[in-house]
Image (cartoon, rainbow, N blue to C red):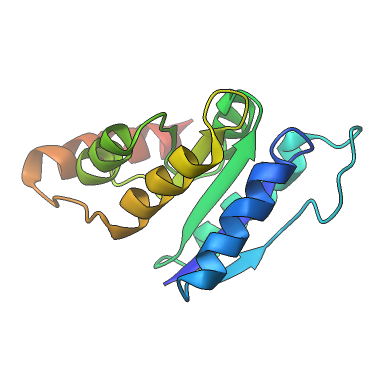
Length: 149
C-alpha cells in the first residue's frame, strides 16, 4: 500500500511531523507538497494532486492536511472514486474507514495536536473496511449518482 500526503501552509508543519512518523514506521509514502512553507499556497492544489494519485492507484490511501480539514475534504471529494473525510479522533478514523471505506483522510491542523494526529493516522492506516452489503450498497449509490451528474 502506498500513501500519498499533501498539505497547504496551515497543514505544513503537521505534514512534516506525520512524514517523520511514517518514515519511522516504514510506511511507503510520497509527499505531494507543498515542499516549503508558503503562506500564499492553496489547499485545492494539494487536494487534487493527492486525490488523483489515490484514484490512479486503487490500493493506495491519501492524507490531506489544512487548517480546518474542511477545505481539502470538499476539494478532494470532487474527484470520482474518492471518498475523503475528516477525523478528529482515532475512534472517528476507525468508523469512517470501517463503514465508508474512506480512502483519503483529512486532518484539521488547527484543531488537533501532533501526537493525536499521528494516532488518528495509525488507526486510519490499520483499519479495514467492513465490506458488508449495507456499506457497499451505500457507496454504490454515491458512485451511481456521481457518474450520472
